[in-house]
Image 1 (cartoon, one colour):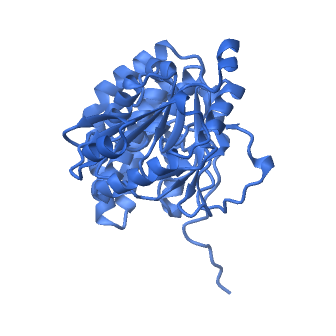
Image 2 (tube, rainbow, N blue to C red):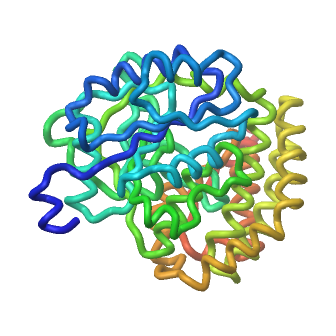
Image 3 (cartoon, rainbow, N blue to C red):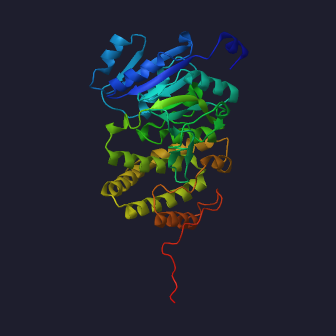
Length: 368
């Protein structure tokens, strides 16, 4: 940001909101946007009507004529619509918002302030529950298999003035994140093959490898109606996408030799998750996610090759941001033990501190 831009005022921002069958959610979101403590002449609002059949586009044109509307005939997921919104944006900074969030008045000023203060290309919000009492996202962590998870999920959201300093995170939540539009495009945006889930994890990981930074601005707060838009996909499909997309992130974002080792490890462990799953839907999701990932593997390898030509940071430099490299994707001591064993067999454990030792599967007993 130049000195001249700082004199003019806060940076121009495009709010980019994808919405599918979410007219009532969108109404609440836009109601909160209307009271943002941010200059209106520095704000553009774009909505992508993602195949809705509830009259969203017509309602927007009637009730919110200041909102620019893009529309698609069918549901294109999350990643693709966000990329199209970013291409249509006129501001340097793009703020992606889920339609099922309500922003607090100081939200956007806190995001842009953190971007200017830290030089980060991507700034995430602190996402709270709908009643504001619990944390849903306060930075992201990831295990070495590419499965991301929100930091501090479920903790009380008691915040004080000392808790507002931006801090580094591997990725920002796509539910409420600010990104430099030029950097976003240069990094190839969200991977549209992901459709939904872990596209924000993949983007954050990629930005770090390219020499950029991601931070969380705790003072930028939104309230999220949990699973407000998630019900559009059946649970089994969501689980399959999580499995698929994590595998592809591994292929794309590690350095070449380590990507091969971790991928072999990940393939073995997805089979273990299928074997140990107690729920039929999860077993099917593991199989479907694996098959979908294998069909997308050539494209992911080409993506990874392009990324490696431009890498600015090594795996060793990015690894500390994972936060929880040994967190198992599923519960259970048996899987946790197998994860460590398999990682060691395939040489996928070298980046991280020694994993915790799971308790024995069976307690030893002595006979009197």
